[in-house]
Length: 163
Image (cartoon, rainbow, N blue to C red; front, top):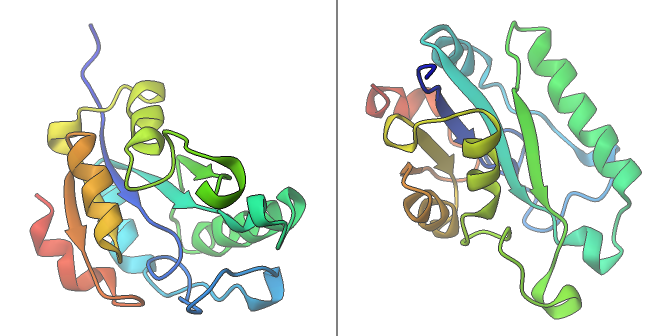
């Protein structure tokens, strides 16, 4: 059996792009944060980098799948220019007021569990960096160590917590 991978899961808004206090609805408002060196260092240590983000604005009709794809393309392209590759981006398109309950909206662990299964990841060697308590809860529920940061806080500040 092949060895399991290790990963750092990352929330999106407030971790990889600037937190606006509400949904980022247009690619023009999508400001990528400079966490290039930190994520490159994690990637160089053998971690897969996987984004796990709630995107309830889709269910609310505030933006389209097409607009979301443009934001994610900008995120990927900007980081690629600095040698950082995201293995995957998982998102929950649901919102409880519009689509009812689901198992992928954080704090539920569905997004992380998808990544763990798809990429043969060992949760015990993996982390989830997020700026909300629900991110840490989702990590814990998936068996991954959650690391809580402030919105827009540099990931460099918490690199020492990742072995």
